[in-house]
Image (tube, rainbow, N blue to C red):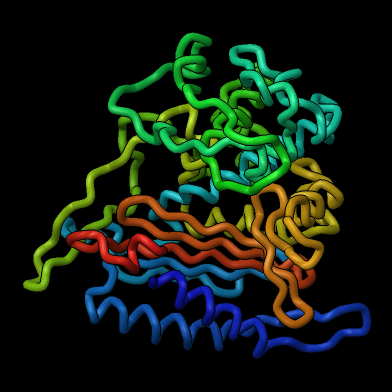
Length: 370
């Protein structure tokens, strides 16, 4: 439940800082206020052994307002957590990077429309009848494709060459689409894997190569990668569970399958994650226009699926929340030992990322709900 509390506090910080400007509401984040909250909250959490490490970053108008690490990159090895060096698994936040890559292909004309059937672009696999030919990119990116993804394999015990060969791709997709596309929203990592395959089939590059060349390198995110190997990356935060007597239980490294890297393979430092957040927050594309236009960024954040006109629900892999006059688009995530939350305030050209390194000796209700 740690991130749930953090989420509420961040919203309170934003509302407390709300000021009126002639055109629209704008949140002016106060670095001192953020620092006071973060030092108190994470200092207490570390003292109470609720976590072994955390990293917090805020950015506005492209400038870092706050960047700080707490606790340990690896407590047993006594390596302090450094937000400029320690890497974190950004898990499901990876979906927003995949969405950004698809929007790049749309802007370049490689994908004619988000409403095109994805089967028109897939070479190694075709979504099966009776609904496969109807599924669009927009439906995949809003979890409304009709897939459930109950048995989608997330990890791998062996290294798999990328791009993955056609036989492996076809063997991976064993579940049919369960309901008519566009009817119901059900979170499905399997659909995001299809997006990754489409990006590779269209571009001729592996997904990891495509996002590195078109997103990470232009944003100068040297630590960032889409990971799909059994080798643990350097300086990756090592989570531990903490027993009542203070002893540590290591949480083993969890290698990501290449086909699910699109939904959970993103790894980076907090410092470099803020560069990505700053790009997303800048809806006028004053910087990094080569990554995505302003219209492309607004398309990612806009409402694309919901069951009622008042339901904000989801953009293109971005969840939407309205607080007073301020829109926040966000994505959170969790893997064993790590929880993260990324939020973007487009009206204010601002955003944040919070990552917590923690685990219980056994799963609690709070862990499962988070």
